[in-house]
Image (cartoon, rainbow, N blue to C red; front, side, top):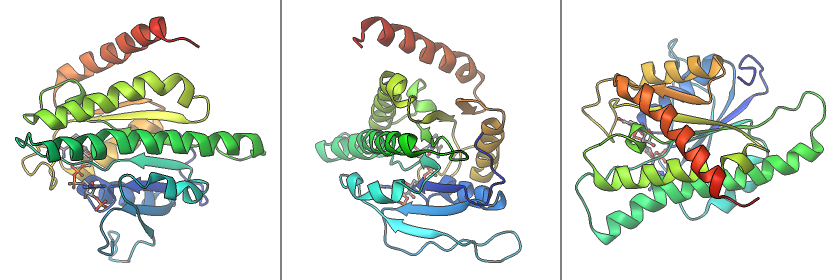
Length: 243
Ligand SMILES: NC(=O)c1ccc[n+]([C@@H]2O[C@H](COP(=O)([O-])OP(=O)(O)OC[C@H]3O[C@@H](n4cnc5c(N)ncnc54)[C@H](OP(=O)(O)O)[C@@H]3O)[C@@H](O)[C@H]2O)c1
């Protein structure tokens, strides 16, 4: 994993005011990282640590569809965690379809491509000691398991497949990690069985183990099916893609 103890490590997290976003910010803070909270809402995000002290962070507003505006900011980022998401549950309207695809899949894909472009430019200028930027993509267990929410499943599966399709090129500039999480409690899923803070701790633990596929779920099937799915996609896309 990118050296977490370095004081100059800059971590940006989308969906920062959500349950997992906040939990990850707290965990990274304990590791001495400089924090950028990317939020689509305007409400100020104030976090405090276990000692009650406020956690220093820079809050940057962004909007789906306006990802390009983040390009200058991404120049400073070492680890980008793409974590924002919505769940429209049983809504199958055209508006819900558009929102799910834009928020859960296409905006994440656009940010990925943008960050890879920025990282490629940095690679040329990278001197000794400059880190290889990392991107962590929170796709969800819904990539391969039912989530009782058709548009959530469709949009997360699309994101997972786009990530698999684009991984060979993106990996030339970025270290990619895929987060495949089971149900945890949040506004998006109030009946999740895991706690967001525990999930955040497990994510960082597996990143420390140097895992690219980070799985945190009580469902044992996911630990078997997800590696098989990513390998199957790698072989299928690899056979069909032209250089
Ligand atoms: N909870 C679960 O069971 C579960 C399981 C697997 C995966 N996940 C994934 O984990 C990630 C975090 O979810 P969470 O459970 O922590 O949910 P959450 O508390 O609802 O956080 C999601 C955050 O996404 C951001 N967001 C919402 N609508 C948006 C929009 N239109 N445009 C841009 N950003 C928007 C918001 O943060 P800002 O206001 O800061 O932008 C929101 O707080 C999501 O990608 C979710 O799919 C969740």
